[in-house]
Image (cartoon, rainbow, N blue to C red):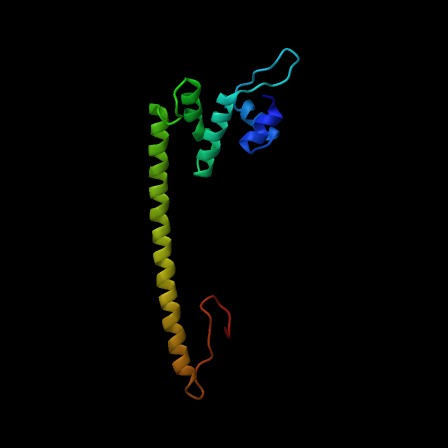
Length: 142
């Protein structure tokens, strides 16, 4: 198949396919008249790349999966190098999850502090001549 058909079947653009070719992820086979030519194996490579990118893998992280498919394996994740990338990605995700949990805890603490401060101000404001509300971020009268 030609580049336009492959792009359409893979749900991408011809520009993306040329980029993948320039990065060595997609083979650059040409016909006698210079047209790029592709087959079902190339479509499988593209689907593997797309799936991994949908999972948050960057383009270079897809390389071991592509190489595994090119080596004739039925799946791109059946090679040791692909499994190593999965493990690294899981470690990265675990780190990010930990960081997000810490941020969430800080936001929760700040919310609790802000709610308590607001309640205290409401009580004090109910007293004639009580203090004027002051925002912790430096503004006045929230």
